[in-house]
Amino acid sequence: MDPIRYLPTLSSVISTVNTPGFGGSRGHCTLSRYFAGIGAAYDVIAIRFPGAAIWVHGKSIGGLGALYLAATRSPRTIIVRNVVDVSGITAARVGRFVRKVIPKALNARRWAALAHCPALFVVSIDDRPAESAIQKVVGAYGERASVLKVGGSHDDRELAPADMPRYAAAVGSST
Image 1 (cartoon, rainbow, N blue to C red):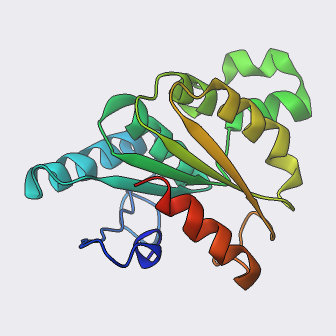
Image 2 (spheres, rainbow, N blue to C red):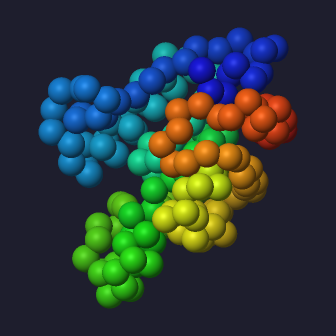
Image 3 (cartoon, rainbow, N blue to C red):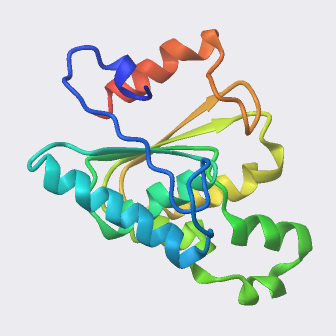
């Protein structure tokens, strides 16, 4: 229900997208299918609801998909929670030389630099392995971006109750 549960005055329709191989969906997960599936889902929503302000919310690898849509489509806003920058994290752990062998599609900073809509980056303070990579993604973002640090770790499904008012305020300022 994120972010709409924090925007009670807006009318909305929520769509959850699982590309092939994710979320129990059938099919084999590949990079090309992942990005094609995300793009196709966005296009169907845009056709089904012409003129609607489309918000995209992505968590973890879904954050990479949200950045891709910000670069290739026209969402109103994206909300990215604990994005996985495979290229940046790998380079930090193994060394920069491996960045050359990682597919460009997995470089979150690349998509961020091409973005053309506002973004809210939600970063869990206990998501230490990705923290420096996330900072670089935010720094590369091509449009207005704000950062909200929240408690918890990378895989937490819900925000801590103490973080909800700040998140609601950040989402509300994105409208």
